[in-house]
Amino acid sequence: MLEGWEQRSTKMLDAPPIQMDFNANWATGTISLPLSSESGPKCISSMGWLSTSILHDLRNPLGTVFAGAEMLMQLDPASPQGKRLAANIYRAASRMRELLSDLAGASCGNKSTSEICKIRDVIAAASEAALLAAESQGVQILLDVPDGLEISVERSRIERVFFNLIANALEAMPHGGQIRIGARKSENYVLIEVEDTGPGIPRAIRDRLFEPFVTAGKDHGLGLGLALSRQTVLDHGGDMWAEHARGARFVISLPLCRD
Image (cartoon, rainbow, N blue to C red; front, top):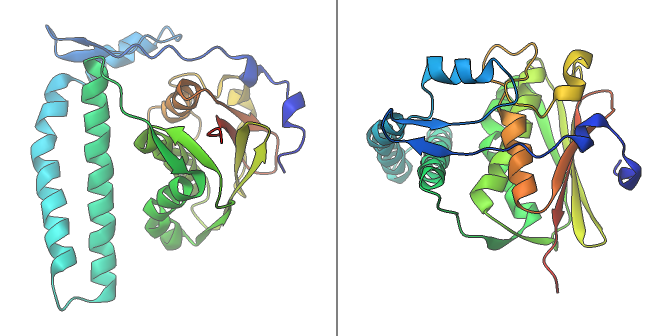
């Protein structure tokens, strides 16, 4: 599946890194994102999204959800299904809390701390977070990732990259299918391939896939997921690209820890 990646030559690979300048404008309470699209600034100004006030105000209700899920997990007796649902709520609230923390840190110019992780554990955590939605749609998530490959990353950010790819695949397969995630070592890098059995990437957006606000056929979302995901991978010294396949196939390269 991953063979021939060294010779890849697509317009997507040649695309420059997305310049995500998270600069807080404290006068207006917004965090600006420079965009390559002319319509981008207009969308940002109309939504006022990622404002510092939203970051602040979301913490309280999120804290309530987090604490409530934690209490539900400790209740006894409780049905296995109830405990599982509570665990999913707890993990989702935890991811949201990490995201808010990352966004608040980014607005102040702070960087998260890297840690050494097994890539298998990172992918497994992202897959587990999407498991309930996958099962409800009849989608299988199949992992073929060796256990010994270690990377130095900001774990929460890289987990979100894989979660975003899985979530995109689920949205493309509402009536069932498979998501296959494989990995292998290639010199000093690990190559991870995420492939689904959905309809594939629309031809109209293939050359602009990693640009902000590019989306097609989605009921929800702003078209920022892939742009942010690729930027995250680039920030870690790797890269991310799409390859031709029956469904959608994305490949991520990340530098391995040196022995």
